[in-house]
Image (cartoon, rainbow, N blue to C red; front, side, top):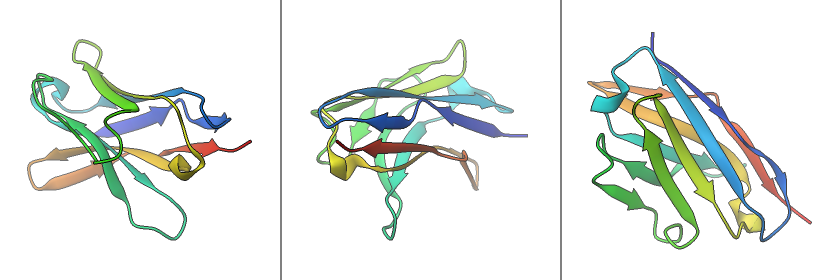
Length: 116
């Protein structure tokens, strides 16, 4: 079955960096677009970034492109989110996402907290 397992979250000071990882299994990873979403308490889940199967097409939410970088390793079925210059408003649960056919798959999430 499809599994997405996020890791790399934690507590970081403003201005710091984190790299999130999402290990995928149960499907042919290299064929699918992958995405990162985030959800802060009391808010909707919003897309942060997406990357096409061959990494040729990358999209970022408007405010993310300058500080975040999405990448993928198709050989090892992992998608990454490098986050730099983190701000308190980046505090959220971060989720890995794959849409396979009509099904939408999510990981369990990894918490990112940006606080001094």
